[in-house]
Length: 313
Image (cartoon, rainbow, N blue to C red; front, side, top):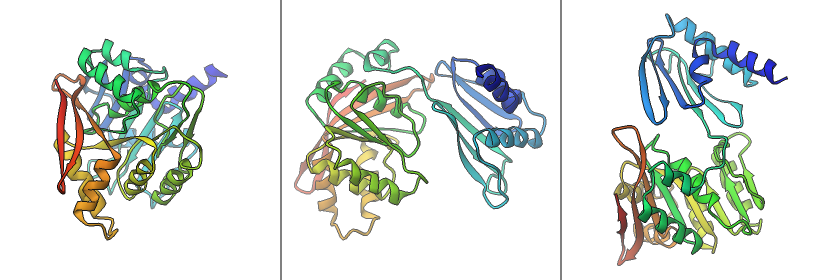
């Protein structure tokens, strides 16, 4: 059965198969039929010539879509495909994509990663590792932030795997992206990836006797629900996209103010500071390596949020 599955994958991936089948590769990007690159051991490899036309790229996309149990429809131009528990593919098609059919594939590590693994790979140093472990074991709620592709989901995953095994963890993931090899863990995924569903799952998590709750990615109206959940006494963790550690608070303020909740800026800032006591910031360096670069405590003072840096690489 496994050989048959591999054969189907090989036929679907076509020219991309050898790259996909390399265990050291964790991301493949097709921006155009003549602009293909991938990430191997945290290094970008480009100048890859695999396709001769947009038609060849579309042929691969059609096969992968079918393999995932979906089909290309004439009025739908982007798709999220799950080939297995650890392979995620996002596809954008013309006319939305002016470059022609594009594809972004991410392989989620199958093995359970812990903070010590990141330390071994030099993504954490001795000081940042010590601070993180201390804050996790003292039930400090934290926002795990960074730019797209910086490895913040992997870092969040490692943080959750550091939680003592006797505690119950509930996660809310828009797509299954975490690798949690532990008991006393419940993972919730919205059926249709709708914001309303995510908000409902956050509410459900409060009734599940969770010691810790985690929102894998916080990006919209669900942010206020999650912040309120933490303020009710839960220890919480969330992934968040921002360009730098000081941009985190500003983006979160704008996001919450845009929800038309009738909250003043002062109340928004107070809510954020009451919920998240720590911001952990991850970056992808120029050499391609992912590294934790900043850890800051969140302080509220007279209507302002101030960040007190505990660590800077």
